[in-house]
Length: 254
Image (tube, rainbow, N blue to C red):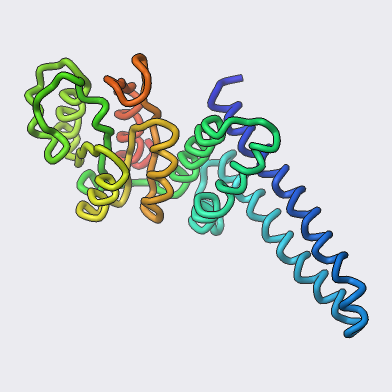
């Protein structure tokens, strides 16, 4: 089984565990005040049961829609709202549930990014080059380089000591935007200024997760960086993955 598939299975498993926990909490919230409500009016326990039952059906329906989106990679009914629900509500809950089972936060973040990517692929069929932004972390730049590229990646002298040269040339070839950010605040400012319709971002699990959350509703396709020297120092990336993702959206999924 591939690592990507195992991460998605982990994410879906946590979704179903969360659903089961939600069911137990709903039953408790219904049962505990049951006696008191019955004393007020005999219909109140039934009304409360309908309320929790409806809420539970929405949660179960949402989870199945996410699973079907992952399987078929198609823009299913309400998938845009589902991506928002996954980003804003479900993911923080999964982090807490994962803690109960001793699953590391980084592993769940990794799974979250991969699931988010599938939902983005399902939602975005085609994008014009001028609406696509490649957003890169500054740690890709060679640590000893004296050139400032965070304001303008075109300042790169293309010496070839890091992958920024290749990214600049790739952006020129396909006429897409390229920006380099030193952190979340700068990244958010870039998104506000450039107003992309789709972002392909490279970063670690933590930064990709926060970037996906902060950029919502703008879809972000995440690619993990490679850290041969540890975090935030002369990191690397798989250029083929970036180009493959970019061409997928530019060519309408062909």
